[in-house]
Length: 308
Image 1 (cartoon, helix red, strand yellow):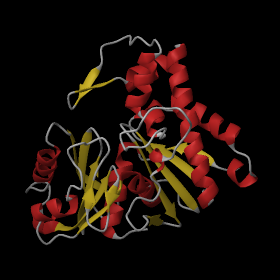
Image 2 (cartoon, rainbow, N blue to C red):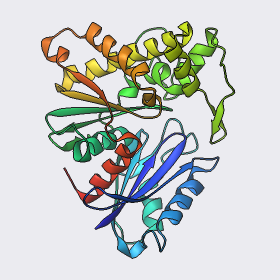
Image 3 (cartoon, one colour):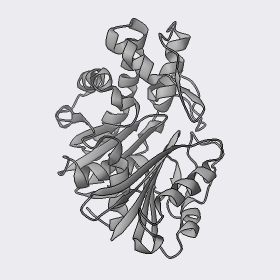
Image 4 (cartoon, rainbow, N blue to C red):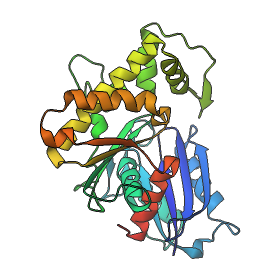
């Protein structure tokens, strides 16, 4: 009953083999690189080998991908992977693993599902948010992921959060992602006078400055603090819009930027409290992921296993 879980992000791919108990038996992460298709094939080949698990031992594959996606056709068009437009992700993985069923959902949806299955959020309606290179989201109602007809339900990164803000790579203007994603926060901070104290690290050939920005915000550097406050305000708007529509009980926040911990969560909770009006919105709880970087992989495994 071992399944393969794959997590497709804007800058990294992760894969894991997972047992029905939720035990991860092997795990790999790789930077996307200039050819994401080659990266996908490489990570599958590296993990599905004798000594980790053979192809014959797999009963299913679950994939969580940054979106948008088309779950019916099995294609993905991640905003932050420009060379993948209507990329046949399900077909590609199925060709790599003939005869093994392949299931696809959004990365935010599967992060939420992972939290439901193996984390601490197991009642009512749950909204999961991935704050990273982009902003992903997903909903789980009483253990069932709400995917929508195309698989894009809960895609809160592309809710419009205000007027007069920058164009989003999705083609719209003022999306939450243009304010609250890691690269957007860094871009705004640099444009408003932030001078990074340390040289950036690199992932997939791209500078990763969000950690440095978070460190400066934690130290009280004003422009860095404001960048996180702006992000928190935009995220709160998206959270409360979603909660008003779906009567959400809990919000769980994961992703690379969310690793900043209270540097993001404190202003986010404050912004949610400030913006909430109706009583059922004021009861909303916003918490960090209890599974860390494994939440999306465990959600992908749950999808493949058909678990609630």
